[in-house]
Image (cartoon, rainbow, N blue to C red; front, side, top):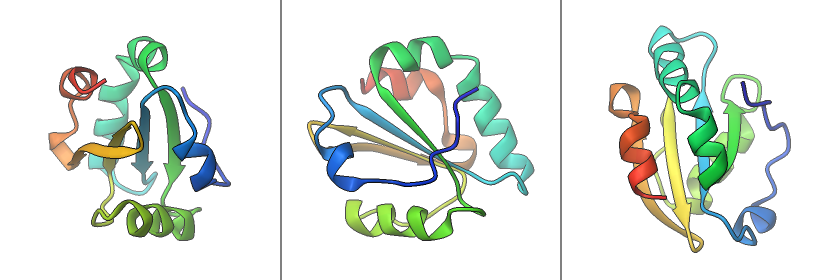
Length: 106
């Protein structure tokens, strides 16, 4: 499983050569657990194609909100945001989080 990111540096996200997949997860939500488990089934493919950032929205709510504001997306949890060339190319939440779709944007 990915490690939780505790300090989100927007400038480092913007400097990534690879696409970036931001996963916002809540340990308090069963739907979030289902979504994360789906993503973990494709962890190898996601890691190969992108830089993955996992954020615990309960422990790191301020970073989660900061990212949403900076990227111009509504804050949701669970949520996946895909950035390519520093642009948001895909956003999904709840049961709409599907690894096959995410991988198609990478």
